Image (cartoon, rainbow, N blue to C red; front, top):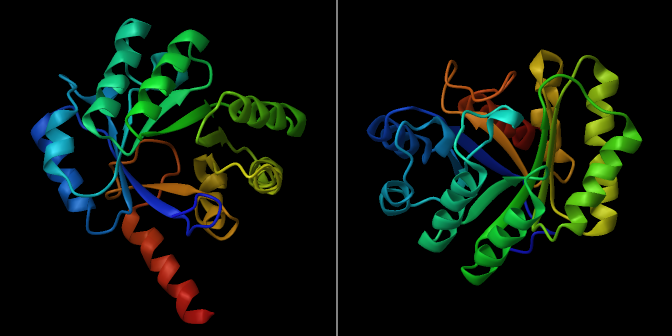
Length: 234
């Protein structure tokens, strides 16, 4: 499917310490998800082959750095190297932070291109939402990085934060750049649903309440229920 013309995908994020439990949860998530994110940074012994071989849905592998809200404390070359392993193993996507060292990021992109893995270049702020101009600058930097898809997720304190982030979809569409954009927190919950009707590339959900990987993340069941209600009403 052309990334410029698509239905917003639902990604269910799996972040569990035990590999066997993570695989069981991911298999359960396949009922509702279009894509499944495996948070390697959450695993006590992160490996990619178990999930590549054990799941049918497209997979995103993320190894989120501690400095961007994740749990990975490994050296940067090791952290990014695990994402390169995922690309070589056949991952549909890898997620790498915009703030990653440019040489490491570019090296991962080269490997990903070689193995037809799409690269999501992401930027998260778990405290605030930046100004409109700062957000636009982040989006433009993601585009210039050579990313296949951008991802901008911030913490919303009020409705104005939410609108600034969702408004990025207008510029992204003009650029022809697939973008994941929504807000975290209670105020940001609505954006996780709204982005699905605003040309967002993907939204993220938890397998169930209590297994969320970010503040304000809804369950996949709730997201699918809302989608069905919208479809029935239209």
